[in-house]
Image (cartoon, rainbow, N blue to C red; front, top):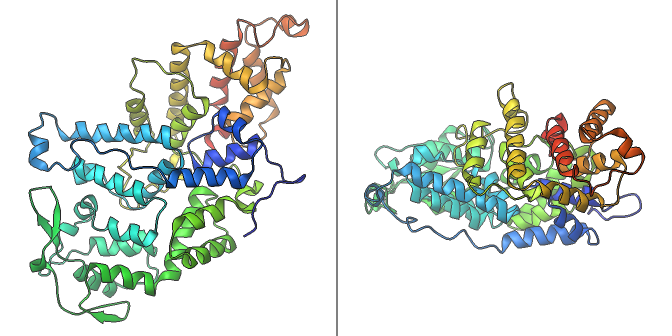
Length: 474
């Protein structure tokens, strides 16, 4: 896979930097662009990936190890703690960029639904596990996820005993987490794997620590992928990654590709990624860097092909503008609630298969909400500090710029994926920006970006731009 090396034909500019941040993080601030304009793709990718890889896990709340009795005695119901941690996730999204992008990605891969788990401490432990392994070794990630209390509870692993085996986790381990539906396993493999996964069902206290119970483990021979033995949990993971490494690599690399590059997989690129993934013993950083540094990642054919999720839409707009928000409004709670209304409640995908994304995000009910809620953010910025709109446009285009088309184009290019809007849309955008300012002011030099009207002009223009179809793309 060829690396992207800027040249006369392949530029390195604000558009490319914006693309990297839009796909890998949650939007790109103007300061991000200015910082990396004189750098290179490799430096930017390394800074983003290595920076995320070195991050500490979000500090544990005081209730991180509580059991059911402690929550019941706390004086607050469990929804209070669930909401608290959903809000924390949005704080992390705002502050941590790529690591939290991956946390959202992996939480939609190793799915739990927090209401079904109904144990806030398990939710925190699950989230911390995702953060700590998001850029680590995928085999280790799979192994530890299967023993996470939230997963044991969500997919009934804590009910899996030798006399009454439960196949839920064994099935999803293969179908959703490593191989893909119907890909390289049989029903017999699921049945035998479920037996090997028995025993993790001893609670020290109700909904507290879950321990292994030798008495409920099936210690009889099992045959998994043609290999026979008295297999237990660790054996299952070893056998899976030894016998099915090709299928695992292709399945995971395809999923990564579809999420970060395009919903239409390129088999040759995925094969190259899978080769690296296997050669690097399923370490995630090498394969991610290989993809993000590639010419293919920056190819124009892969731009404007992914629809923003609700979290992308709201967090991306907020991060890219970096505007002040009204103090009396709980930003994280608002983001959680509005994303939920648009179909994406964090830690609660639609089912065990997760959100399918892309075109599923938009329908006749959600599209008007996407317009309304993006506009809601702009309104709150305006109510907090009108002058920040003027300050922003001056920083973006330069305070001396007076060409209306140039101003509109540069703001559009910053807020959007690389795209050309229709000429009638450009005309409407310019007319919106002009607003109530007399046309003669633009002709005789009376108007400039220092004018008192500019804040309102920029505010109105942004409110128009977010209604265009292209704004829904990342």
